[in-house]
Length: 271
Ligand code: NAD
Image (cartoon, rainbow, N blue to C red):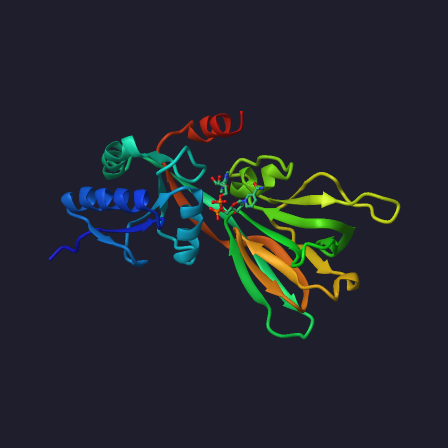
């Protein structure tokens, strides 16, 4: 007997997303698919329903699944959520005809090292990592690229973003937009202090994907805890030593149906 094709659905936890997800479930089941609300590893497609945050949470919940993702937007246009509610029927038709492109989205990896030499923790991010002090005091960080000391940063935070994440927090912080397929990642300062005592870059810097960025907590900060924010989710540490960032060996893929959608979205959202 031939097995049914499987779709994983990841709705946001609000009324509208749940109601749209029931409609999507019905449309796929009518076409002979099986629908799962868990992370079924045998699925053909992951569908995220909600805003960009729903996409981010689904990617994390699936542990950066290699099953392609697509997003249905229940609000305004989204950077990850390409399908609008009136276009759902059309999206399913085009999906069944394989009328789409597959985009690879690079991830960033952070390897977190502690001062007590306990085992390093490894995280991936689709948008960005942010390193800040937990009590909102100034954080002092040594910044090294491939072991070359670049600067001693003092300010609110350092933000390290992927090309896909460059239109999110990074953009609000004055960083540049990097097209999703560009290789590399961006280091953007948040409120850097520039005075006689501190000199650090005021603009963002794009780092090649094969390079490692090290961000090391300086002794000035030994009294306050440090926070690493991963795609909007905070982790607090009392003994953070340094974090190594690089382009992850993992990536995710996303279906794209409208070729010009990225640029339309930039114009619609920002201009
Ligand atoms: P949220 O619901 O507060 O959403 C934040 C906003 O970021 C939404 O408008 C969303 O559409 C937008 N966004 C998310 N990813 C994007 C992307 N790749 N390109 C363009 N816009 C994008 O928070 P959430 O849903 O938990 O999302 C977490 C994200 O929020 C973080 O990854 C971070 O990028 C973003 N954020 C932005 C700011 C800021 O702009 N000042 C501050 C904190 C967090």
